[in-house]
Image (cartoon, rainbow over all chains, first blue to last red):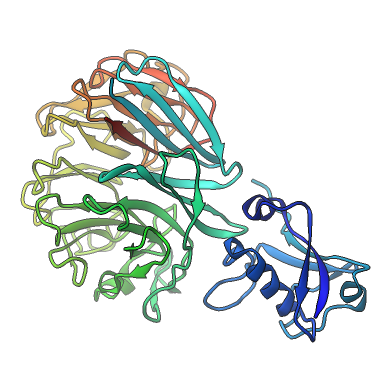
Length: 100
Length: 371
């Protein structure tokens, strides 16, 4: 089990009643899909807000960043970068830049 | 003294407006879920403290909120709106096949008798039901799987199921409307559906009198006359007196018969209200004058109601779910605008005043009459 720092976008912080960053235990081996599962397990209200509940597909206006890298298009089994696993860097769930 | 609670959904949050029966002094609470699109909020007729709300954004999808204390506190409930069967395709704007995809909940219709039962009309068009207070949702697939489904097409706002009317005299019968498919009725609790669009004429489809394909904007019914339905179509105000089997136009002397809202007075089943909009190209009132039109004869003869409404330089729209009526003795009429005003007439439309003027664009208005 790894403890991963996760940064959530503003609307999801409000829904989950959390601050800018949360720490979550992610099952080994820590992967992209595993961290999203950990977010949904810790905050069930966020189910469906990051990825589609039926297909598991990332919502098109949500992106994943870590270590200055865009991981949005990587498959769920992609290992998390070492600095994210060690806690040195956060995993960021980001609302796509769009007006309105 | 009895009072009213007005539930207002806007592009950027929800608001709850409350007043006593005089409807003069208003308390404004909100925004709830600021920044989210609140397409619709509606209270249970069986328990006015039970309110359901549809919350969505393009970023994070759909949530449903539920209040059990009249809107003071809210709890997120189920938001899994998975189609019951593999959805096929409907027509895209250009007539090509387009996959059916869930986008959002447009309308929530609580049961007339059970606070835990609520229907949801969604985009892409389908009807869902929850019997556990919104915790879980099941599609009634007989509607989407009606043979005409591949010929349905989206209106400008998307292919939305926006109107759900429950028949108070027959728990098995309900009516729904879809833009742009038309109106449908079930007589068996939602298992099977039939299109009820005979008499509608629409110029934007290859066959103006087709069985489906009509852009119905809203339908209203007085609970004492469940066979009489009033419709604001894209163009044309229509009426049926046989449960939707046949429609006839009652636009009469309206200055324009394009519009979105239509509603019926709480105590006068032949008194109806519309807000004429200039055209399908110009979604604002004619000549910059915001006018509600009232017919006391169930259509054809209409009178403008302007006292208290802006009569110059007004270019707002009034969207399809943004009109409601209360059940007080002197029935109040309410509507909200895309300019953020919510207007109230405590005397059936004779005089109007703004409860609020500067909300985000109003998507929906529902009023609860409180004991």
